[in-house]
Every structure is written in structure tokens, then in C-alpha cells.
Amino acid sequence: MALEMRKIFKIRGRYSWSALKILLGLMVFIFTIDHIGIVWFGSNFLAHHLSLSVEGLRAGNLWQLVSYLFIHDGIWHIFCNAIVLFFIGKLIEQRHGGRRLLELFFISGVTGALIWFTVNFNRPSSVLLGASAGCLGIFSYFCFACENRPMIFLLFFVIPVRIKPRILLAIATGLEAFCFFTQELAGGRVANSAHLGGILGGLICYYFYHYHRRCTKIIREKLMKHRRTTNATDDSYKLYIKSYSAQRSEIDRILDKINESGFNSLTEAERNTLNSAKHLMHR
Image (cartoon, rainbow, N blue to C red; front, top):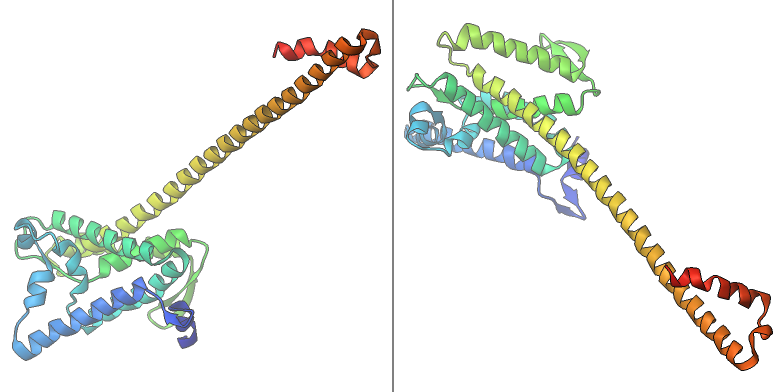
């Protein structure tokens, strides 16, 4: 595993830029600073300003739509999100690059935040924190982009079960929807609406990238076809000009020969060239 990670993040002896390392590093760094402040100084300054709250968003603190992704409630909370982000995010970054991973994470996070805010608009004391929406967005994108790649799911954390990604996503979405109606709407603390919003954000990204790639491919093929047609027309035109110039010189030579030696001195080929001269002049 260490050798594999070294190959991913190393190019020509230097460590390359990695979106996955940046996201994980920020999550761990902010979590550590936040809990040092709580334990040592009794202050939750970071959590208060970076967590997404209904009151904060109403007050215009738009940065909270993104910053809440890096605030976590405890070790178990950040551990679960980090595990999903590491294993699924690594595959996305290897296949599509770091930029795609960042786009998925933040778009899914913002989508989850907006849906959560819509559901909890009338609950001023509600607060949202954690990277679950961003991680679930990456997970849902992976389930559609790599639908033929089976996954090993630990049933009851013990029994390994081989399952297709889309089926696993359907199960996860169903559980989140069930908990949303039975727990969150009843006043529960778990933000299932944000989780569902993150899954939706990942699906939106998948279909956008998929159809954008298809449209770009079609446009590129049409441009290439038009370019080939234009080049072919230009070549034939140049060939025609070249052939016209050559025949014109030959006709001038034949006419000079007629002036000097008479028409009877022409060969059969020269007479045929003169016969075709009328057609050439009319083109």
C-alpha cells in the first residue's frame, strides 16, 4: 500500500499536487485545531464560525456553505468520512484527476447544504457540520461512473458481500430517505437531508460531465469533418490551377510552333491538346 501511494503522488522524484491529500489534510488540521480550542481554552470559535447554521446563512455568511465540510463533531464522525474520501476519492483522482475530485466534493457539499437549509429553514437553532455530503457525492458519482466495478461490502461489519456499485447506492439512498422521514423531520440530529443532497449533487455532476463529454466529442468530430472537406476542396483547387498553368504553357508553345512551321507540323498529341483548349478556356 505504501509503494502504491508513493507511485500515485510522486513524479520524477518529486511529490506532485494531490487534491485528495489537500482535502484530508484540511479535515484533520481543522479538526485538531478546533478540538484543541475546545479542550484547552473552552472555546468553540472555529465550529461557531465555520459550521453551517440557519441564522448564519440568513445573516449572509455564505462561506459556511463550504466551510462546514471541514468541521466534525468527534473522532468517529471524521474517521468515517475520511475512510470514504480516501478509498473512493483515490479512485476518482486516479481516473479523472484532482480537479474533478475537488469539483465533486464541493458541488455535492453545496447541494447538500442548500437542501438541508430548505428543510430546516424554520429551525433557527439547527447546525450542519461534517464532510458527509461531499463524500456521498463522490460515492454516488463513482457508483455511476464505475458501475461495472464490483465492490466488497461488509454486512454487519463482518460478512463480505460482493455487490454492484449502483445497487449499493440504491440501498444507501433508501436508508437515508427512510431516516429523513422518520428521524430528521421528527427533530433528529442526523442531517439526512444533507446526505441526500450530496448524493443528488454527485449524480448531477455525473450526468453533466457525461453529456458534456458526448457533446464535445460530437462537435469535435463535426469540426474535423468540415476541416477535411475544406482541405480536400483547397487541394483540388490548387491542383486545377497547377494543371491549368501547365496546359496554358503547352498551348502557347504549340501556337508558336504553328506560327513558325505551320499547322501541318503538329503531332497528333499537339492537335488533341488544341482540341481540348476550348474546354479549358471555358472553365
